[in-house]
Length: 77
Image (cartoon, rainbow, N blue to C red; front, side, top):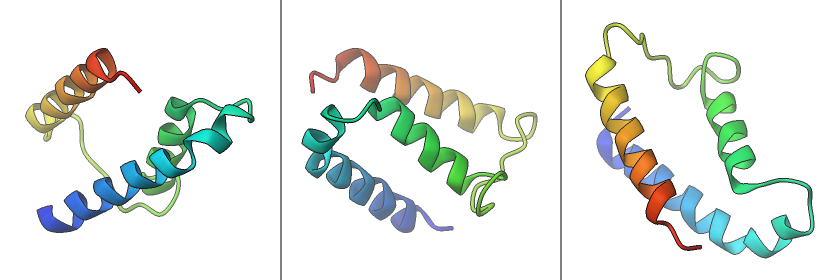
């Protein structure tokens, strides 16, 4: 998949999480659990849209992990 597609998908996911955030507070779910579910659905366990080999894509996965860490540390939502 192309970079514009993933950027659009990520934007739609973030906007959706923002809009349903109030509804999630009433459920025993955290935002991290929802993101984990979406990741599982997109990964090899679900639709198999994302299938990364950790040894071949180590540099990409490291960058994604660093960005996720920064977002989780500095997000004041």
